[in-house]
Amino acid sequence: MNKERTISLSKNLHIPLVGFGTYLISNDDAAQAVSNAIESGYRHVDTAEAYRNEQGVGMGIQSGLGKTGLSRDQLFITTKLWPGNAQWGDTPKTFDTTITSLNASLGRLQLEYVDLYLIHATFDPGQRLEQWKGLVELKRQGKARAIGVSNFSEQHIEELRSAGLPLPAANQIELHPWSQKPQLIRYLRKNGIVPIAYSSLVPLSTWRAAKGQDSAKTEQMQKDSQDADSPFKKMAQKYGVSEAQVLLRWGVQNGYPVLPKSMNSARLKENIDLFSFSIDEEDMATIEKMDRGDGVAWAFGDPTRNA
Ligand SMILES: NC(=O)c1ccc[n+]([C@@H]2O[C@H](COP(=O)([O-])OP(=O)(O)OC[C@H]3O[C@@H](n4cnc5c(N)ncnc54)[C@H](OP(=O)(O)O)[C@@H]3O)[C@@H](O)[C@H]2O)c1
Image (cartoon, rainbow, N blue to C red; front, side, top):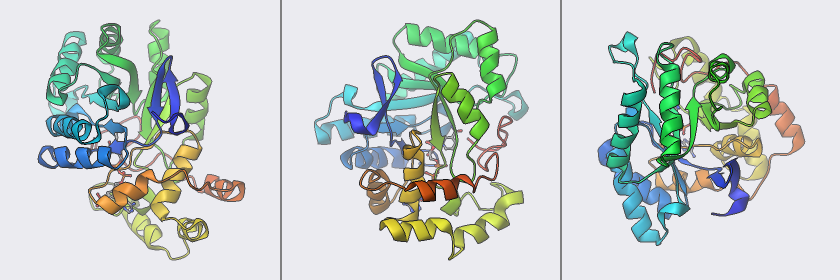
């Protein structure tokens, strides 16, 4: 893998700074989408048990490897344990069902191992430690090269430390200029945990502003994403790139791997083209002042909406 476009996740393991996100890509569409992404230069794919598309993603990986001549070890694949949420009528995963879950994901993905396995969310305080112990065991077995968490707060991670367990290698969280989480980022950095950014395109994505995604912020988001004076529009013009590239570049420039999802082949290519420009210090300082708090994709720390 090209070292310039990766960062170190753990000993001997580098994570590419741009990954292909697959949330809301159906199982039927995933094979073509992932294969196209690999052909377009993506070397990192993010899926999850909860996305119900691992089988399609697995087919896309096989097809992408065939078309590019790459080998499995040149790709970085992440999937996530659905921890189960009793409030939604799911049975929370135990140590044993955590092990079974990754084995089932590997079967659907047609892989021997994933590069990163994450607990998707925090839901069940009673089983969280057992699930994490399951991930530690799966890493020991070589089925996950690295293990981490997603949507965890500082308190959730401290719970693992207090139990004498290893800390996660990464925490995948909603991160973009409107949700910068400076305190959590400081904590993650101090503890050597890599922040991975999801929903980087929120400040311009209209689907996150759709009714039901976050009713309280919907109106403001729609207004702001269409604002002709938006700083992102001005920066896009200044650097000769798109607004999406500015948002994604902000992530990688901060050292956060980003996971843009697109079903459109032009946008797919645009979203990985982030290394021919950089955002200058003045604009980075402008963006730093745009933080609006915890984000829109989940109620952070209490994820009860979507995955
Ligand atoms: N761990 C978690 O809880 C969690 C939560 C959310 C997401 N994620 C991961 O992070 C990935 C990315 O997050 P996301 O799917 O929420 O959203 P995103 O990648 O921030 O945004 C996707 C939306 O933006 C559009 N888009 C993509 N590229 C664009 C461009 N260049 N210009 C304009 N619009 C563009 C897409 O439409 P088109 O397809 O039409 O281009 C889609 O509507 C997910 O797919 C998933 O893998 C994880």
